[in-house]
Image (cartoon, rainbow, N blue to C red; front, side, top):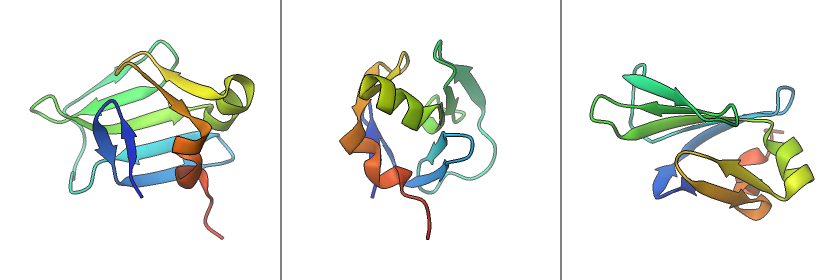
Length: 93
């Protein structure tokens, strides 16, 4: 299952329920990002050397979905519904 945000497909994801943080990365990218950008909401966007988005760290995911019914990301511009993120927020049994 992939999560698609602003045309970027993240096939790898890990949700930390204790910290309410969702870690997303693209398949096949290895190593540290070349650069990173923090959004005004406190999320983190990571890029490779070519400027392609390779990872995101989204904070307060469930809390924001419960409060607002969506998650806003200033960059890349977009909003995610609870249904779009539901599969990625499943914790391993």
